[in-house]
Length: 334
Ligand code: NAP
Image 1 (tube, rainbow, N blue to C red):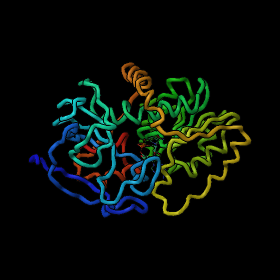
Image 2: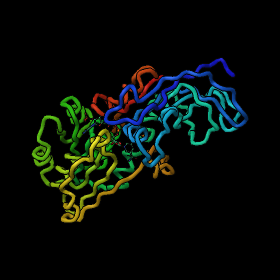
Image 3: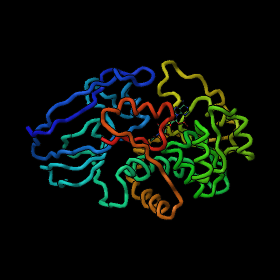
Image 4: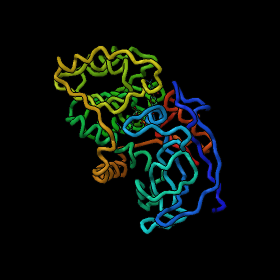
């Protein structure tokens, strides 16, 4: 037994509605000794993602987290001990090692991070991680946008949405973002170069879309679902493409969500709406990272990271994703 103590959040109950403190249980236990082939990772950051809500409640594209298990979550950490020839002490790795300070693992599913001191570790949970990949392929591969077209993105000031809009601008599109506060809308238009932004909490989204998209909507990047999707569907053009990335407005729902009522517009406009999972694009990650990195160096793309300090804060911090108080990619610094 090593003298290290592990601190962990375990799933204690299936969430109903928003996560509650009682959905998680704090545990502490000694870190066990390594066996041959294993390594010990000291986690430094946890990625909090809307999909964590689904993992805690039911089987999705991954099986539900078992009650009593450490809560699943994306992590970045440093190898502190190794009896695995593929990993050296001091290397940084990302993986799904969960809401805990230490993890003993055989290395399956871990990725080594490049040793580049100019890139903050948190970037590998955002622009240079699953978030960047989601934005890049969800827009460019799923929607096949063409210069001059109009792109609307919901959840526009979030981690994925803010990158989608900026990639849209780089590709010569007119970009309209939908977000939940005036501050977020100002950030989109004044800092990120969006052509227009709509505050869905204070504006009539249908009316605002008519003003912001005078030639209709060619591409819609869907992060939220529900009433916003309906408003967009009513204004799509012939041949429109819609990538269904996420439906966050429904993740905490305790009753089936009504609508959208405008789905028949897909027929009228011969439009394509396609769901996708970032995991489908993992083997093409290098291609996206090279281009995203180039855009970052050229000052064409910006990203922000919202760091919450302390493993203890994790269960409360995740609700920032659902009340919209996160400013960019949400991570916990352990
Ligand atoms: P994020 O956008 O940084 O944070 C979530 C944001 O969603 C909040 O800041 C909030 O912004 C907005 N929101 C919350 N509840 C809402 C509601 N009821 N109606 C409208 N907006 C609401 O999170 P992210 O990690 O970038 O994820 C964005 C979306 O992408 C999620 O739907 C997620 O599930 C999806 N995703 C999918 C994949 C994939 O492989 N398909 C991969 C990664 C992420 P406001 O202040 O604007 O309300």
